[in-house]
Amino acid sequence: MLEEFVPNAGGSAIRLKTGGTSSLSSPRKMQDIEGDVDERLVLPIAEFARVLGGGIVPGSVVLIGGDPGIGKSTLVLQMAMQLGMSIPVLYVSGEESERQIKMRASRLLDGTAALPDKLLLVTETNLDVILSHLSQTQPALIIVDSIQTTFLPEMDSSAGSLSQVRECASRLREYAKASSVSVFLIGHVTKEGVIAGPRVLEHIVDTVLYLEGDAFQTYRLLRSVKNRFGTTAEVGVFTMSERGLTEVSNPSEAFLAERLVNSPGSAISVTMEGTRPLLVEIQGLTSHTNFGNARRTPNGVDLNRLLMVVAVLARRLNLPLSEQDVFVNVVGGLKIMEPALDLAIATAVASSYRDVPVRADTVLLGEIGLSGELRMVSQIEPRIKEAANLGFKRIVIPKRLNNKDKRPTDIEVVEVRTIREALETALTKAMKTNKGIN
Ligand code: TYD
Ligand code: MG
Image 1 (cartoon, rainbow, N blue to C red):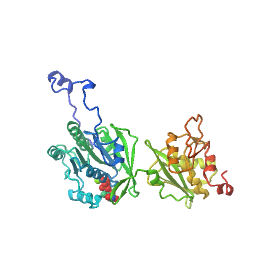
Image 2: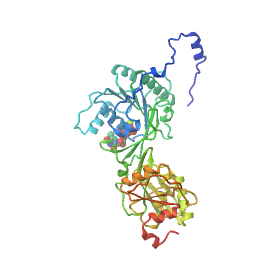
Image 3: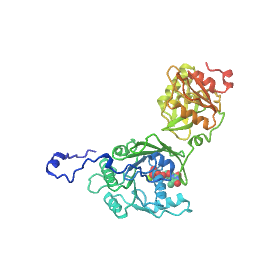
Image 4: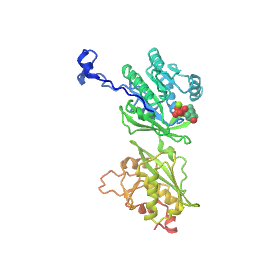
């Protein structure tokens, strides 16, 4: 939809000549500007706080994006209920009635704990009314769920349109900066992946978090993609249960919990989510193609990487995969893009094809090159450490040229040059004598 844009003719130059200096900004010495201490609101949900950079900065605007139904309202309601015990919080919903929100809140509390006495709820979509509620109730934090249902009546376009979403967010930002109230905006990611949508808001807000996961899996990742007050490398891990979102403080353990040791087609690797290493299980399954072209079905890994890995296995190791359907799955609903997991993908597929398990105590790391060579991955040390922490005894990694790193003592580091060597050391003995890897 096209919308008229009226440029502000003349603009600031004219104001400068005619206006006095009173309404202008004035440069100040950096030393004289207050705010050198980082005064954040303490957030009791540790995973959430970490992703925000250590709590909520007063006057900041945080956007939480995600697919509909992923748990955004649940997450902010849990936050509002905890903060509402000590500071005034206003939860504005354009999607649910006050009654519905209260019912959800009671269910989250399981009827045992008291409801927070400083949490106000209102169902409202008109931003003018919301702003007047703000000046009346003076909360320290406001949640607007969602930015797509909020509208300014003076604008012609309908709620959820690009201009409405942008203008509403800008108004709320102005309010936040002027009053030091923290604003949380919820934004649905639409089908195309844009949030007339969080994407158009990214430059307006201070922090952008995405809640991700598979609606059918219990894990949820809270990922920071922009943060003026912290690193964007952090990820918080939660599970969704009937009592809302629960923090997972040891995600590696959780992702491996249901693993079947010694079953073919399962390989363990370590992915980095920001600064945090996470052990993940990659599953591979090959099955004879019955009709026409063999299919490659990735779930949680990139299709192109899977195609490349399968091609390398076929060409360099002579695995006849052209007549096999290949499925690869990252357990727990994680989505992994980094090439460091190539080797685990290849091993899972080869293990399934040969019907020989991967050694249960072994972790695999490495990017695969087209000649079947292994390439080094980033942040190798924290990955090795995480594998050791979780009790794995061996880790297979690409050979390092100048290896001056400290060696961990509690895990055997096996350095290999090629995918062939990696498979020889990772797969259980039975296989090599059986069919052998050519
Ligand atoms: P919701 O927070 O409403 O999603 P969003 O605001 O992102 O659209 O969560 C919706 C889903 O979460 C819904 O399908 C039910 C589920 N859910 C639970 O499994 N447990 C709970 O305690 C709650 C509140 C929701
Ligand atoms: Mg919602």
